[in-house]
Length: 74
Image (cartoon, rainbow, N blue to C red; front, side):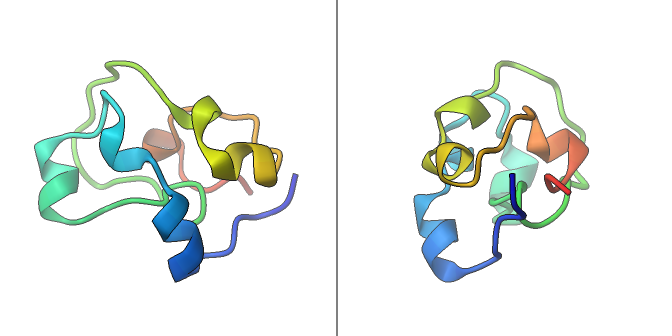
C-alpha cells in the first residue's frame, strides 16, 4: 500500500460523491478524495461505504474503509 497522491487525475477517479455516507455538508464543501487528503470535518452518519469499489483502492492497494471518518491511508 502506498499513499494516494492528491492530484486532479486521482480526484477525477474518486467515487466519494456517490457513496451513501456522503452527505450535504461534504457536498457543500466539495470534499472528496479522503484517502489522499484528510477526514471530513462534517458530522458523519455511516450509511454504507464504497471505498472497496473505488478504482484508487485497487490501484494503490488500500485496505481501509470510511476514509471520510478516518483520513488518509497513511
